[in-house]
Length: 468
Image (cartoon, rainbow, N blue to C red; front, side, top):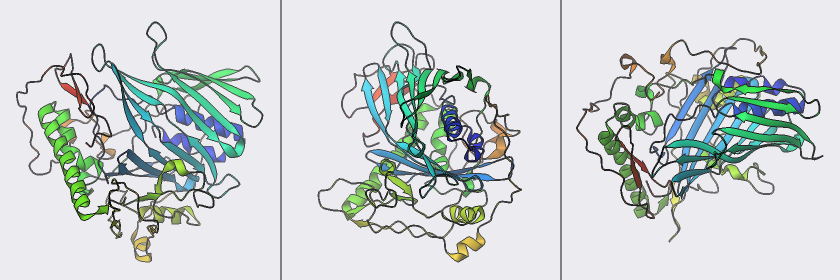
């Protein structure tokens, strides 16, 4: 979601091939906002949530809701909708860790489904199924540490018989270059290849029409700035929301106090282990709050969407965009100063004997339905008539006028005077910390540590399924 505003005109594109190409362009435009370095991750904890929104030039908004729906294996489910533009996205990230000698890989096994709700011949609109490339951290034992994307990813629109196969190419030992891509767009029904894709996902990408031979720039990442979302302040967030949950850890990282950052991270992970032990002792399974399992299989309401695993636990089926906005805002707070809607707590069910803990809710899970009082008290953002502006082939978004658009943690771009007020007992001091060098080789179930040759800090690589 680096450039969500580029999605807005797409549902109104009449030609299905042009519409598909625009989706591929949106997909490829998001990878250039990669992390600055390779560091140990903050693994989301079970039940952690994050919400935000984008404000667009036509006075409409896009709304985003996400939750960590499973911990073993890790699954992060998310939802996005721009109601006035007939756009909806549902997705689940399912990373799986692998260690490959001097590299660590995150195999991205989840999918996303983009829907244009004003298109298509089936309920739910015209669907685009999207996968992701895998991610690699090179040089975790020796040499220069480098982040790469690799392997194939796909965009498919079964209704229009169109697919895109994109290869994110990793640099070889004796040749090649970093961040290169290549791919094709073809008609699955006839087998005809329509377009070729090439370039650098961190730079300029091109598309060539194989019928006409014309080649043009699809997207130029060197001239693009991502569009950051807005979020509620830390004071408005609950303890399980990402920014508030990890605030002390991130602040210590920004202050380069690695000892405090590790301590704060450990506190959160220990809390999660204690909660799991309590559930185990009571014989109950944890249930997601905002999402539910997909009703797939023959005759299911989400037949063909089984790979999502989880989907938003609410019906967003209003007859008008205004009604859809009310339904979204009644699920959980998203906008600044929005009050918490009264929602039932996730139900717990007895845990079958000798069955490993999962995050599967009961079969009779009821969807969250806003009552009339919630809908009546939910503010609706004002908007003006929608006017679609053409999106140039090379899209560049101007930098925001102020970094105070929301309280999103920016990992260093916010000035000291703009930091949110610290909660009590969050003062950090710069202690003298001694860092060990590279420890013993990786053993199953044990973290891998590597000392940064520049900063002296210790980077720790932990398998996402290792219980942390």
